[in-house]
Image (cartoon, rainbow, N blue to C red):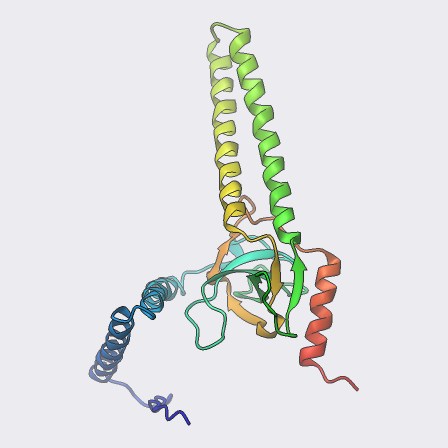
Amino acid sequence: MNNIQYNDYPEQESTLTEDEVRLNKEKALQTLDELIESFITSPEMIKKGNNLSYWLSQYSIYLGFENSFQPDKLKKYKRGDVIKVNLGFNIGNELGGLHYCIVLDVSNAMKSGTVTVVPLTSCKDMKQYHTSTVNLGNEIYQNLKRKFEQAQEVFTKEATEIISLKKSSSSFTESQSLEFSKKLSKAMEDLAFAEKLRREIERMKKGSIALVGQITTVSKQRIYDPQNYKDIMSGIRISSDSLTLIDNKLKELFTKIV
Protein backbone atom coordinates (compact mmCIF):
# COMPACT_ATOMS: atom_id res chain seq x y z
CA MET A 1 0.00 0.00 0.00
CA ASN A 2 1.33 3.44 -0.94
CA ASN A 3 2.15 5.65 2.02
CA ILE A 4 2.13 9.18 0.59
CA GLN A 5 3.00 11.99 2.97
CA TYR A 6 0.79 14.99 2.25
CA ASN A 7 1.50 18.49 3.49
CA ASP A 8 -1.14 20.04 5.72
CA TYR A 9 -3.37 22.31 3.68
CA PRO A 10 -2.90 25.95 4.72
CA GLU A 11 -5.59 27.49 6.87
CA GLN A 12 -7.60 29.84 4.67
CA GLU A 13 -8.51 32.30 7.41
CA SER A 14 -5.13 32.63 9.07
CA THR A 15 -3.26 35.92 8.86
CA LEU A 16 -0.11 35.36 6.86
CA THR A 17 3.08 37.33 7.18
CA GLU A 18 5.53 37.89 4.33
CA ASP A 19 8.15 35.82 6.16
CA GLU A 20 5.77 32.85 6.46
CA VAL A 21 4.96 32.96 2.76
CA ARG A 22 8.64 33.24 1.80
CA LEU A 23 9.44 30.24 4.00
CA ASN A 24 6.68 28.20 2.33
CA LYS A 25 7.97 29.33 -1.07
CA GLU A 26 11.52 28.21 -0.30
CA LYS A 27 10.32 24.81 0.90
CA ALA A 28 8.18 24.38 -2.21
CA LEU A 29 10.99 25.40 -4.57
CA GLN A 30 13.43 23.08 -2.85
CA THR A 31 11.02 20.13 -3.08
CA LEU A 32 10.33 20.93 -6.73
CA ASP A 33 14.01 21.30 -7.60
CA GLU A 34 14.84 17.95 -5.99
CA LEU A 35 11.99 16.27 -7.88
CA ILE A 36 12.99 17.64 -11.29
CA GLU A 37 16.65 16.79 -10.68
CA SER A 38 15.66 13.20 -9.88
CA PHE A 39 13.76 13.09 -13.18
CA ILE A 40 16.69 14.55 -15.15
CA THR A 41 19.16 11.96 -13.87
CA SER A 42 16.87 9.07 -14.83
CA PRO A 43 16.84 8.10 -18.54
CA GLU A 44 13.27 6.82 -18.15
CA MET A 45 12.07 10.06 -16.52
CA ILE A 46 14.07 12.78 -18.30
CA LYS A 47 11.19 13.61 -20.67
CA LYS A 48 8.88 13.96 -17.68
CA GLY A 49 11.36 16.37 -16.09
CA ASN A 50 11.42 18.44 -19.26
CA ASN A 51 7.61 18.49 -19.54
CA LEU A 52 7.23 19.51 -15.91
CA SER A 53 9.78 22.32 -16.32
CA TYR A 54 7.99 23.59 -19.44
CA TRP A 55 4.60 23.50 -17.72
CA LEU A 56 5.84 25.41 -14.67
CA SER A 57 7.16 28.13 -16.96
CA GLN A 58 3.88 28.27 -18.90
CA TYR A 59 1.81 28.15 -15.71
CA SER A 60 3.74 31.13 -14.36
CA ILE A 61 2.88 33.07 -17.51
CA TYR A 62 -0.81 32.20 -17.12
CA LEU A 63 -0.79 33.41 -13.52
CA GLY A 64 1.04 36.60 -14.46
CA PHE A 65 -1.65 37.52 -16.99
CA GLU A 66 -4.59 36.17 -14.98
CA ASN A 67 -5.84 39.56 -13.75
CA SER A 68 -5.51 41.26 -17.13
CA PHE A 69 -6.93 38.38 -19.19
CA GLN A 70 -10.05 39.38 -21.14
CA PRO A 71 -11.92 36.33 -22.48
CA ASP A 72 -14.26 38.52 -24.54
CA LYS A 73 -11.29 39.47 -26.72
CA LEU A 74 -11.17 35.87 -27.96
CA LYS A 75 -13.45 34.40 -30.63
CA LYS A 76 -16.79 32.92 -29.63
CA TYR A 77 -16.57 29.18 -29.04
CA LYS A 78 -19.49 27.03 -30.11
CA ARG A 79 -20.56 23.51 -29.29
CA GLY A 80 -18.68 21.09 -31.52
CA ASP A 81 -15.72 23.38 -32.19
CA VAL A 82 -12.30 21.71 -32.23
CA ILE A 83 -9.74 23.68 -30.23
CA LYS A 84 -6.17 23.06 -29.05
CA VAL A 85 -5.81 23.30 -25.29
CA ASN A 86 -2.80 23.18 -23.00
CA LEU A 87 -4.05 20.71 -20.40
CA GLY A 88 -0.92 21.18 -18.32
CA PHE A 89 1.17 18.70 -16.38
CA ASN A 90 -1.24 16.32 -14.73
CA ILE A 91 -1.12 13.33 -12.40
CA GLY A 92 -1.41 9.63 -13.20
CA ASN A 93 -3.72 8.84 -16.11
CA GLU A 94 -5.05 12.40 -16.37
CA LEU A 95 -4.41 13.68 -19.89
CA GLY A 96 -1.83 16.46 -20.02
CA GLY A 97 0.02 18.57 -22.56
CA LEU A 98 -1.28 20.19 -25.74
CA HIS A 99 -4.33 18.33 -27.09
CA TYR A 100 -7.22 18.87 -29.44
CA CYS A 101 -10.51 19.12 -27.57
CA ILE A 102 -14.21 19.34 -28.44
CA VAL A 103 -16.22 22.24 -27.00
CA LEU A 104 -19.34 20.96 -25.21
CA ASP A 105 -21.01 24.13 -23.94
CA VAL A 106 -24.47 24.60 -25.43
CA SER A 107 -24.02 28.34 -25.02
CA ASN A 108 -20.66 29.76 -23.96
CA ALA A 109 -20.76 33.50 -23.25
CA MET A 110 -17.97 35.65 -24.65
CA LYS A 111 -17.24 37.00 -21.17
CA SER A 112 -17.08 33.53 -19.61
CA GLY A 113 -13.54 32.75 -18.54
CA THR A 114 -13.99 28.99 -18.86
CA VAL A 115 -15.11 26.41 -21.40
CA THR A 116 -16.05 22.75 -20.94
CA VAL A 117 -14.35 20.29 -23.28
CA VAL A 118 -13.78 16.63 -24.06
CA PRO A 119 -10.09 15.97 -24.77
CA LEU A 120 -9.01 14.03 -27.84
CA THR A 121 -6.14 11.67 -28.44
CA SER A 122 -4.84 10.18 -31.67
CA CYS A 123 -6.04 6.76 -32.76
CA LYS A 124 -3.28 4.14 -32.64
CA ASP A 125 -3.36 0.93 -34.66
CA MET A 126 -4.15 -2.27 -32.74
CA LYS A 127 -4.78 -0.39 -29.47
CA GLN A 128 -7.85 -1.30 -27.46
CA TYR A 129 -9.56 1.82 -26.08
CA HIS A 130 -11.60 2.04 -22.89
CA THR A 131 -15.38 1.90 -23.15
CA SER A 132 -15.53 5.51 -21.92
CA THR A 133 -14.17 6.72 -25.29
CA VAL A 134 -15.75 7.51 -28.66
CA ASN A 135 -13.99 6.89 -31.97
CA LEU A 136 -14.47 9.93 -34.22
CA GLY A 137 -12.60 8.44 -37.17
CA ASN A 138 -10.75 10.82 -39.46
CA GLU A 139 -13.43 13.53 -39.53
CA ILE A 140 -11.28 16.25 -37.95
CA TYR A 141 -8.32 15.44 -40.19
CA GLN A 142 -10.50 15.64 -43.30
CA ASN A 143 -12.04 18.95 -42.19
CA LEU A 144 -8.61 20.48 -41.72
CA LYS A 145 -7.44 19.04 -45.03
CA ARG A 146 -10.40 20.65 -46.82
CA LYS A 147 -9.57 23.98 -45.22
CA PHE A 148 -5.97 23.61 -46.44
CA GLU A 149 -7.14 22.81 -49.98
CA GLN A 150 -9.41 25.87 -49.96
CA ALA A 151 -6.51 28.05 -48.76
CA GLN A 152 -4.36 26.65 -51.57
CA GLU A 153 -7.05 27.49 -54.13
CA VAL A 154 -7.28 31.07 -52.85
CA PHE A 155 -3.51 31.55 -53.09
CA THR A 156 -3.30 29.94 -56.54
CA LYS A 157 -6.00 32.30 -57.83
CA GLU A 158 -4.21 35.31 -56.32
CA ALA A 159 -0.83 34.23 -57.68
CA THR A 160 -2.29 33.73 -61.18
CA GLU A 161 -3.80 37.23 -61.10
CA ILE A 162 -0.54 38.78 -59.92
CA ILE A 163 1.47 37.06 -62.66
CA SER A 164 -1.09 38.16 -65.25
CA LEU A 165 -0.94 41.77 -64.06
CA LYS A 166 2.85 41.74 -64.15
CA LYS A 167 2.93 40.36 -67.67
CA SER A 168 0.29 42.76 -69.00
CA SER A 169 2.18 45.89 -68.09
CA SER A 170 5.86 46.82 -68.16
CA SER A 171 5.20 49.76 -65.83
CA PHE A 172 2.53 50.80 -63.36
CA THR A 173 1.10 54.15 -62.44
CA GLU A 174 1.45 55.13 -58.80
CA SER A 175 -2.09 53.97 -57.99
CA GLN A 176 -1.62 50.73 -59.95
CA SER A 177 1.66 50.07 -58.16
CA LEU A 178 -0.02 50.57 -54.79
CA GLU A 179 -2.85 48.21 -55.73
CA PHE A 180 -0.36 45.63 -57.01
CA SER A 181 1.58 45.82 -53.72
CA LYS A 182 -1.62 45.24 -51.75
CA LYS A 183 -2.48 42.18 -53.84
CA LEU A 184 1.04 40.82 -53.46
CA SER A 185 1.00 41.37 -49.69
CA LYS A 186 -2.38 39.64 -49.39
CA ALA A 187 -1.15 36.69 -51.45
CA MET A 188 1.93 36.31 -49.24
CA GLU A 189 -0.28 36.31 -46.13
CA ASP A 190 -2.53 33.65 -47.64
CA LEU A 191 0.49 31.57 -48.63
CA ALA A 192 1.82 31.74 -45.06
CA PHE A 193 -1.62 30.71 -43.76
CA ALA A 194 -1.76 27.74 -46.13
CA GLU A 195 1.72 26.72 -44.99
CA LYS A 196 0.60 26.79 -41.34
CA LEU A 197 -2.32 24.55 -42.25
CA ARG A 198 -0.02 22.17 -44.08
CA ARG A 199 2.28 21.86 -41.04
CA GLU A 200 -0.72 21.27 -38.76
CA ILE A 201 -1.95 18.47 -41.02
CA GLU A 202 1.49 16.87 -41.05
CA ARG A 203 1.50 16.78 -37.24
CA MET A 204 -2.04 15.47 -36.97
CA LYS A 205 -2.89 11.77 -36.94
CA LYS A 206 -5.80 10.81 -39.19
CA GLY A 207 -7.93 9.17 -36.48
CA SER A 208 -9.23 10.83 -33.30
CA ILE A 209 -10.51 9.31 -30.06
CA ALA A 210 -12.73 11.38 -27.75
CA LEU A 211 -11.82 10.70 -24.12
CA VAL A 212 -15.32 11.34 -22.83
CA GLY A 213 -14.46 10.06 -19.37
CA GLN A 214 -12.01 12.95 -18.99
CA ILE A 215 -14.48 15.75 -19.66
CA THR A 216 -13.11 18.88 -18.00
CA THR A 217 -13.66 22.61 -17.60
CA VAL A 218 -10.64 24.79 -18.34
CA SER A 219 -9.74 28.46 -18.32
CA LYS A 220 -9.80 30.04 -21.76
CA GLN A 221 -6.23 31.14 -21.03
CA ARG A 222 -5.30 27.55 -21.80
CA ILE A 223 -6.63 27.76 -25.37
CA TYR A 224 -3.70 27.68 -27.78
CA ASP A 225 -5.69 27.77 -31.02
CA PRO A 226 -7.95 29.30 -32.20
CA GLN A 227 -7.87 32.53 -30.26
CA ASN A 228 -9.34 34.57 -33.13
CA TYR A 229 -11.21 33.96 -36.36
CA LYS A 230 -8.02 34.02 -38.45
CA ASP A 231 -6.28 31.17 -36.59
CA ILE A 232 -5.89 27.85 -38.37
CA MET A 233 -8.30 25.84 -36.17
CA SER A 234 -11.08 28.44 -36.49
CA GLY A 235 -14.11 26.90 -38.20
CA ILE A 236 -12.97 23.30 -37.64
CA ARG A 237 -15.92 21.44 -36.10
CA ILE A 238 -17.25 17.93 -35.69
CA SER A 239 -20.59 16.85 -37.16
CA SER A 240 -23.92 16.66 -35.35
CA ASP A 241 -23.72 12.86 -35.59
CA SER A 242 -20.36 12.85 -33.78
CA LEU A 243 -21.72 15.18 -31.10
CA THR A 244 -24.64 12.81 -30.61
CA LEU A 245 -22.23 9.91 -30.06
CA ILE A 246 -20.42 11.99 -27.40
CA ASP A 247 -23.74 13.01 -25.80
CA ASN A 248 -24.85 9.40 -25.58
CA LYS A 249 -21.56 8.40 -24.00
CA LEU A 250 -21.85 11.25 -21.47
CA LYS A 251 -25.32 10.01 -20.50
CA GLU A 252 -23.99 6.48 -20.16
CA LEU A 253 -21.07 7.52 -17.98
CA PHE A 254 -22.51 10.30 -15.83
CA THR A 255 -26.26 9.85 -15.53
CA LYS A 256 -28.31 7.23 -13.73
CA ILE A 257 -30.31 5.12 -16.14
CA VAL A 258 -33.61 4.03 -14.61
